[in-house]
Length: 347
Image (cartoon, rainbow, N blue to C red):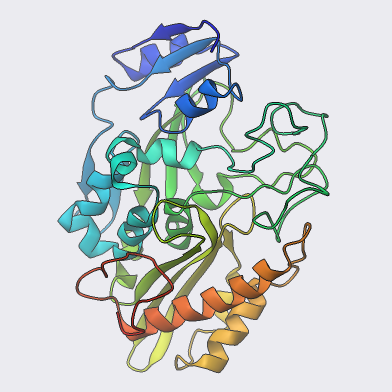
């Protein structure tokens, strides 16, 4: 690890003022510090956000919405009883991520800023356009079994690793940021970028902008009774998703009044297709309807290497997540949150 400046500002204004090209903001450090140790990221200045006031609060709003400070720990949000009751799918997604120890340290802001888990990105000796623009993509023609099947380009086939982000995308979250030019809001759907020809630009943040909070709109809580997050992984504990799905339904009688379906670990951002959601509206839940929705969500999917199996896995987990959502949110999360295997269909 090379030398770097370390700064602990006590206000958002001071944190932004401390930023300069080559600097990095530090939250819980569960991703950034690891990348610094292996030489993938080498910031010249580390700006520790741990002392910034007010960014560790969970605010449940009278209109039914919520505001979550960027420094709230993943475990604290998942276990907050009011939040989990209003947004059970988000709590389930949080509890599916990493290990208990890491969830105790990791922040929600850092979760959304985590870098790809592509083995070639994490190897400083491999060609990677995200690390070094123009270097090439060693994953193309390499081991790509866990990489993207949607939205990828010849420049990059990495996927977004966040479980939390998949649930946020389903509920129309908004990201509050502040930077040298002031504050603004970014719809979560536009926060993560597809690679195109510039995979090194991973988010919509401008240089120096700091993520302050996430907001869930009032309408998001209307899905609480029929919402599930499912995740398929190589081992049940402490593994990133091969594929995942967030599904939520708002029912009126025996018919679907509104639907949400987002796929995870298939692209560089959570993958939501509004057409797949709209075709379910007005219909009774059922296998044929959910199969149509899954097929629509996966239109345009294609292997980026030896990973055609991910398309079928994504189809199946989308159908299963919708089926579980239609069955109703469990009063209590299963012992293995978000696990797509080994859990009864009515759990």
